[in-house]
Length: 259
Image (cartoon, rainbow, N blue to C red):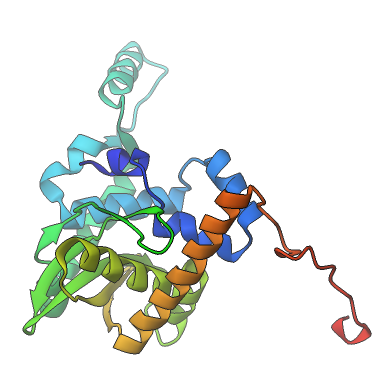
């Protein structure tokens, strides 16, 4: 199953569910008004594909050539590129070169390379027993390391220095991902998995840092999953997708000390 097929498949994903943390109203709007990938998201997906599944990279991505459209040959080359790029995502040559250097840095890091050696991009689906909602997840890599089974997620980041990636974890819901993905694999395999992040900077020297999630971190992510899937189910059942006012339609008081 390709990533595009996975996205279209029935089930709620972590990235969708995390939008409820802002409000169910924002979640509903995002689902009904899907946005095209930002440049950063497209780069991240391209890096994922090349580093994890290099052999299939050019089936999904194409590199934009530098074309002089003022010439007849350039116009012909441009027309051919439009045909060749149909159904594929386009990245620049400079972006591709960065991704190649990032892949080399991963290879030269024994721990990262070992963690990212396994089964890639498998899609899992399950029905949550408590709510009856269909859920899905697509781990980057499933592997064994140090005698333990791990779900490993590869993340590109601006910085791996102390505190920076941890802030990204909070901002983008990586704790929820750890809890939801381990639950998804347990429901499919009846086996317990650890969870690890391999984070890599997008600028030279493309430094890599590994984060192993503690059982407490994963448990907190699972608790967040339970809370959000419950809210999602209740909103679907009632048809009430509330905003900042909350389910009780509360009015916020603005106090003097809030200024």
